[in-house]
Image (cartoon, rainbow, N blue to C red; front, top):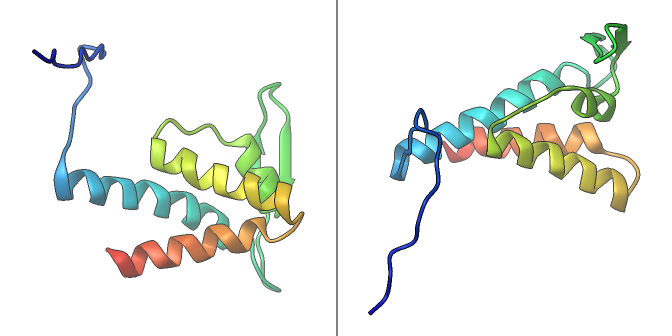
Length: 109
């Protein structure tokens, strides 16, 4: 006799399944990509970020922005991890890989 798994969840937690969960993941990942998209290219824009110490940081470095933002959605965290991995393995292209992944998710939707 096999026992069913015990799930310990917050009482306010909603559990989504199927296509609805898939679309939610895509939207969260695309939100990260849309933040970073405008920092790429010759007409890139600076982003103003409030750091944990209360200081103001202005940058157009996608990797620096992704290090500073705090996300809770698992798919958005995966996008940030994608950028970190790109930085560790190659040392460049962190913004491009996020924009590319966001573009692929837009097509996949």
